Image (cartoon, rainbow, N blue to C red; front, side, top):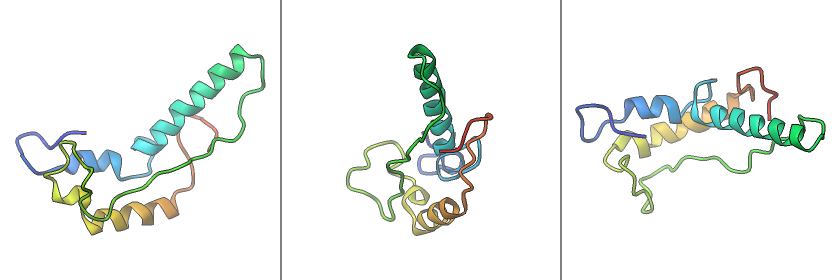
Amino acid sequence: YGLDAGTSDQCTNALKHAACWGHDCSVPVQMRMARAKMAELASQTNVAGGGKLWIGETGWSSSLSETLTTNMKPCEAWSSMETFRNYYQDFLAWDLEIGGGQQAP
C-alpha cells in the first residue's frame, strides 16, 4: 500500500482497499486467490476441488505498532481507533462472500 498521491501522511485510498470486506477488498481478494490455487492443486492431483478454506488470522492494530515499518507509518488514520473499530465491525458483518463465483471460506 502507498500513501495518497501528493501527501506525506494520508492513506485514504489504501484504507479503502485494506480495511474493508467487499469483493474488491484485500482479504476477500486473497481468499479468491487461495481458492484458485486450491482448485489448481486439486486438478493436478485428480482430487475433487472445494473443501474448507480456513482463515487463520486477520486483524488490525488499534494503535501504532512498533513493528510497522511500511510507508503507512506516517498515516494516523491507518492505526487509528476508528479504523480498528470499523475493521472489526465490518468483519463481524461480513457474509463470507469473496466474489468471483468462488466458494466462501
